[in-house]
Image (cartoon, rainbow, N blue to C red; front, side, top):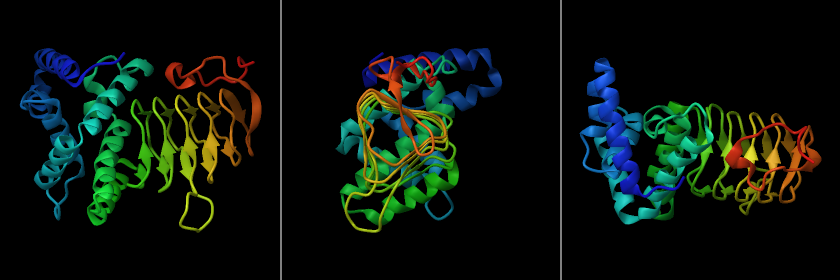
Length: 263
């Protein structure tokens, strides 16, 4: 499902009000996180800052930086909306829009990286690297600020995810915990994978080097991928080899991680 920023924000406000009534212990939490803010951008700025702030760089300063990013580049905010919708649509454990926003560290880590990526492109590399370190420390998700990430991304569970500097991820990609998009070589050029639209990368998969994973491909859990993968192809094993074609055009959307039904 695709929502505008305004539609998502309206839904989140209604959810927060209802949840606060049903669980009074959390009423102040819902108020501080969602209901106290005048827009989705302000709430998201507050949420990311509350996670990444520390003694040396207080949350208030990070909140101001995030707010600056959302004003300067509305696509960053639109991508966050698409990411929430991705979790809601693909994760059966996610039955409201506020869950990724409030609780899912994969979503929160990606939003932190989006801010760091904007800073990196503006030449503010030291602050971008600081945020990378905070994201890794807080969420156990290490994504270089130079990595380019599309919209509609679901990183489920997220613990141990590593994405290198020159990695490129298309739209509507799903990946699970312990996935590595790692580098090969020590040169300055591209050395990390390019993940095309609609790819599903299952838990523990390692994709290494400057290789392309074609649109709609599926990478089985625990695989080590060292060579390019053709579009709509399922690969599995160590090293990974083709085991069939994907049964769905966009496997990232239905999250079917089985390989025995592919043909």
